[in-house]
Image (tube, rainbow, N blue to C red):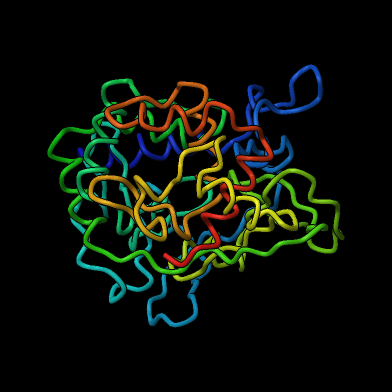
Length: 329
């Protein structure tokens, strides 16, 4: 067995364990998954029972001349590069991984860094910020508020394994690209019914609607293309009616929070080593606010957020995430 074969087998084992529903992902005794279940998505117990796709099927996506067998879309093979002209040449770390538990960055974050609701959009984030976050993961300062959610826990393991040089390679690549509009925010009282699979909300075809309540429902614009990991297929975030305006009032500083733009810059597009928030996944932003509030996300700059997040309610988190997502990146 070659080293390459061994790495593929290891990655396959990791992703199989990461994707399959487990007993730990079942509802708790009160019948509800832990915190912010709409943001920390835990796969439904039956989500692994869907009919398997034909691995030999040749698949394509709109706007691309690339085709490949469905079996090529796996973390072991690295990210499918549907739109190679849409990003710089991927370093091996991004395209294939770095070995020793460091998976291909582009598989989860996508080759263009746009990301998905279950992870982070890293395109256009400051180089220094990405390097610092990788150091925080490696030093055990940054963790996830819901360890049962696969992607954040997987990133925690990658962060612990990644070297300084690998962090610099990834940061240089992703920070070199502009982040594109990616999330369409829709205010509504009623939202399509969804189920949890692949660590995201997936709309139930013919399932009707239900009240949105105090939550955000972020789901693919085209689930088929998301399954194919098309880095040109974006997302829609349903938020409660009025959430964007309420979030704007919070974000400008009203005694309950600090003004976000002081650190995150005009339009919340980032400032120096401080990350951009504008137009990013509201599911991800909500998780970070909760992680900062509960102290599981620490690090060099996390203390600057203490006053802002200390008194936030769940509704505040929804409103702030809705507002930041609504901004032009």
